[in-house]
Image (cartoon, rainbow, N blue to C red):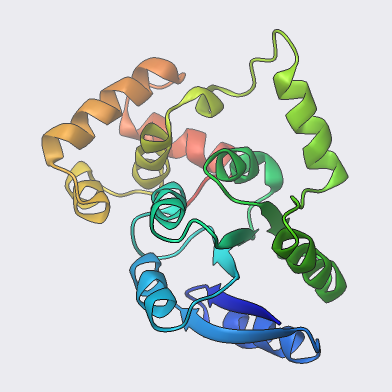
Length: 210
């Protein structure tokens, strides 16, 4: 039996995923969470084999949650579910320890297949994403400017570019304002941007709104 924990801040999405799983004889939902922090509470109450993890939830952010899962629950496999296209978050998620990445426009059958593959120890990526990963490994593949940011710099970019202030970002990421300002400076150096307005435009242009 594959034990699943669904982490998504939208109740309707969690209900839909639970309904899909209910039709499968080898799967059952053992917990649900609406934030990154709540996810770890649920896993402490009911161990799971696979976590269905949404990209955009309240709390620490995708990469910090994946890092903490790897540290506290190393045997748990993570399948990331997202409304964001693969080119925006998939590579970063896989590098941080996710076993698969699936956009929410896929069919229930594809979701079930992805869960089974991840549970069995495999990785689940689309043919398009597999090709993209291969290209990134080839010599001279540079990618988009934001793909060269560190995980924390990327988090700061997405939050600032979504209209948050430095102070708000500091609160969300549990960092000092000074530290966030330092990350902001690094992001501005690495991107074609010189102000928060430029960051908002960049994030909107590349669909990175959080």
